[in-house]
Length: 121
Image (cartoon, rainbow, N blue to C red; front, top):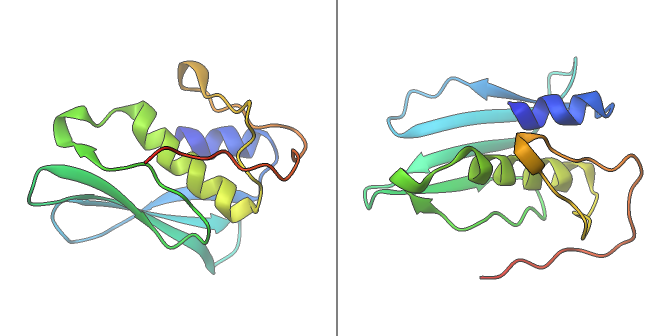
């Protein structure tokens, strides 16, 4: 939710909101344009039987980080997932100098060049 707030402060039209999901081990969210009903993307964190938490999204071109053990899930990891989804929806590459210090997302005021940050793995 912090990522949603950070993007909103930078005049992003998109918000992340939690979506009720009756399945056990799932935390589900929707990303939509503020004030609009059609959703832009779904985002979920799923706890698998092997004790790993994996992120899932239908946001086009989103490159999500690898899953982590349930006891290794941190706000930083969850924020990284949400940021990737938001940047994918915006159609903006994650800038090379993108940082999320101290829990606050840095969102550039203007789109950067077309360079995409490559993730390992």
